[in-house]
Length: 95
Image (cartoon, rainbow, N blue to C red; front, side, top):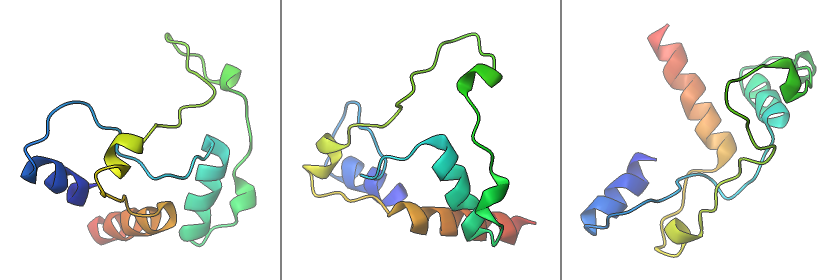
């Protein structure tokens, strides 16, 4: 993330840029991937519908970002599993 921000600012680019990996993933599988990286059984993550989490604002089912703009600049985000591993390591270091 920081590497991409540096790439954008070093080129003096302005505007809106979606910074996310190219891999689309739903919330359930994302939770399962986090559990696996943390050494937990991914099966502890239960799939539920968004109707079980009332919200003032409606949320779309697909919240995947279009990252073509950033990719066209040659800026590649860190792969999802690596990002999860780095985040878990940082949280463990703070604990």
